[in-house]
Length: 384
Ligand SMILES: Nc1ncnc2c1ncn2[C@@H]1O[C@H](COP(=O)(O)OP(=O)(O)O)[C@@H](O)[C@H]1O
Ligand SMILES: [Mg+2]
Image 1 (cartoon, protein in one colour):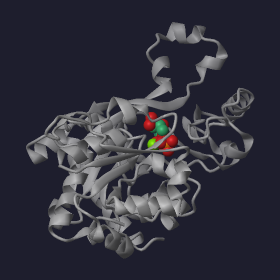
Image 2: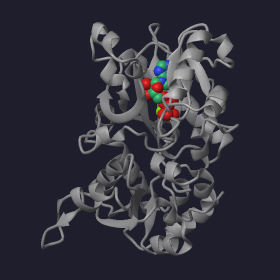
Image 3: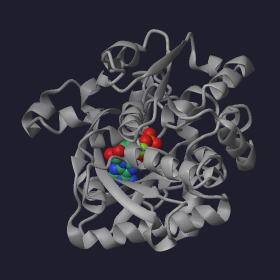
Image 4: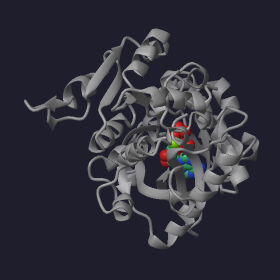
């Protein structure tokens, strides 16, 4: 692991203003929008062929006085593939341009986590040492951390023969490896039938089925709690809830918008939903549940600090379902900007705005933390 002290020392030597950089996908627009709002120049690290959102449509245009007229992507670097980011020549050039990188899921999807830990010699504004816990197949992962933190998760089903109630089987998609090949079943017989059908359809692979996470399907809405933890604030003010999002998943969301009769008319290949995230919506939480949400966040932060010092830096997301007795179950964790924070762009979010008395998105909050760290000479507390 690149030591946090080393990452901080690069950033300390940087020319000012430092630049906020992100791999150009996932939540990068939120990152750039938040950074320019707080006065930082931005840098998008794009892959050729999927760069026009950044190189064209959201690119900054300035007026004659240098003032920003439109857009939030000030500079771009286009790579023929994201892996090229790891070349030492590229990294030292990015350091000489003062790039502080905001980690997102695209970073750890297009690079290996080990490469991010060992080779990505750029200061990360976030928790480098916690990124690995998101990998479900790791021995030390978010499930072990949630268990240590005493945070409820949907009960695991260890063997498909033990399936006795509605269960979600979690595995990667057979062809679209970064997407999901999830399915539900309520008995061993249904598990066998569906897994055979899905394998035939090219959605699941037998070797992934053998390693799949199986857990109780929680009947209730999904709330992705977008928290922020400030290492610079007094501890009692350090945890903030900024916003809540939910995912739009295809084909699941299309299926549930059909009346039952029309669902039953679908060909069998369309009746088993897929869970590919294709968009996000904004939510609020019943007010009496907020305190429990904060309790979960506090427990997570404390457990993460103990097991992976220095622990959480900045944004993190607990993905939860709430059941009919108003119990939260955390089924997934992102120790970085969550995938749904674009819902906060520019407008902020009811909770972030209520706290800060101005529009406060996740990435704006992160940029503000960076500004404070620079001003107070405390970079070592926020970069890793
Ligand atoms: N235990 C569960 N009960 C009900 N729905 C779940 C459960 N776990 C996950 N989901 C649904 O599946 C989606 C993806 O699950 P998640 O574990 O977040 O996968 P990924 O790691 O691919 O993001 C969630 O957004 C939610 O809609
Ligand atoms: Mg998830």
